[in-house]
Structures are given as structure tokens and as C-alpha cells.
Image (cartoon, rainbow, N blue to C red; front, side, top):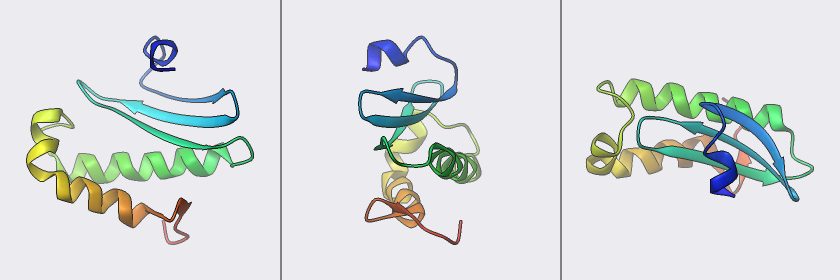
Length: 92
């Protein structure tokens, strides 16, 4: 799956097999959100945009591996606040 995604642009929405995939690529990091085929891709895209806004706010030097690793707990907390038990929270 990654080989087919590596040739795409910075952020795309794809239907692969029985999944909806939304992803965003940065300098040396790619982030994927995967939902079922029945999930609304616009909701997944909005969650990805929210995550992108949060990451750019927290990692002012850029969203790169060297910046994410030292603050991994913050990165995971952001994801946890956006998505709860696999569902996008309504307050976003």
C-alpha cells in the first residue's frame, strides 16, 4: 500500500480495497488516517486538517521526525484528543 501512496501529492483521499485512506506527507514523516469504506472521507479529511493545524502550532520548526520524537507524548495526546475510540469527536 505504501508503494502506491508514495507517488501521490502531499495530502490525498483514496479508496483502497475496503478502506478510505487520508494522508499527509511532510519532510520525512507521513501520517495516515484509515477508515472503513462506509466512513465519510470528508470527516476524515477534516480530522487530518485539524491534526495538521495542531502539529504546525506545536512544532514551529517544522513537522519532522527530529522534532516529533522528543515530544512524542504531545503528538499522541493530540491524536487522542481528536479521535476517541476510532470516532472523530464532535467538538472539532
